[in-house]
Length: 95
Image (tube, rainbow, N blue to C red; front, top):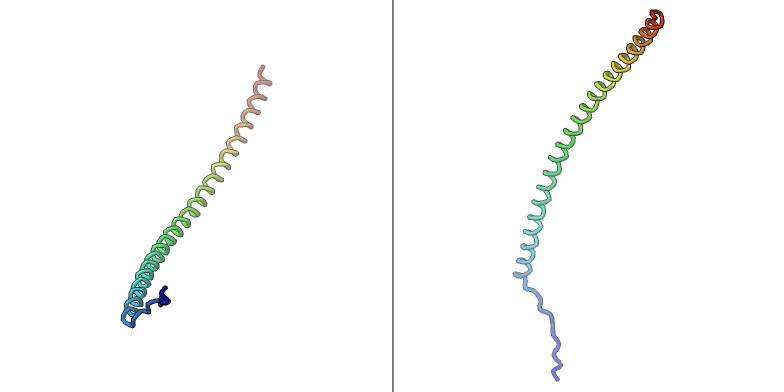
């Protein structure tokens, strides 16, 4: 039996430098991708803010329009009921 011990190979300075350089390049690429995603998210956020502002403005306009239409409908209904009452009174008087 051999009593040789297996010793892990230690990287040379040149190999370490190459490994560090590769890791650095990976980190630079990852950083670039993150910056692109961040910019994309900013643009999307701005678009969503514009859409939100438009929706609020439109909602307010429709709310005002709805309130005005409701008031006109109620007014018309009141006038119609008054006319019906007057017509009933007229029919009773002229029978």
